[in-house]
Length: 92
Image 1 (cartoon, one colour):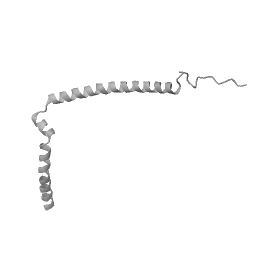
Image 2 (cartoon, helix red, strand yellow):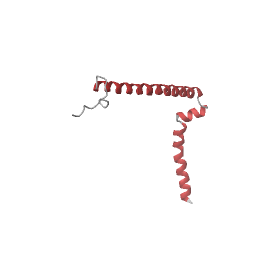
Image 3 (cartoon, rainbow, N blue to C red):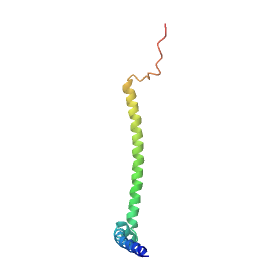
């Protein structure tokens, strides 16, 4: 019987600082104020802008990869012929 009372008192003693920390957090303050939809809309707009910029950057990166491969092929073989396509010399 006494251990149940001790457990309840310990639980209450631990809940007081935990509740103070949680209720003092910015999330709890925003929740109590009813939320700030303007900030939420701003965050959503920024995320959409970042997604658009990321898509553009991915396209630019793919283009740069293609151009780099083309330049590397030209540097390896400046006359423009592919070494695999060159006919082998006739056997005598």
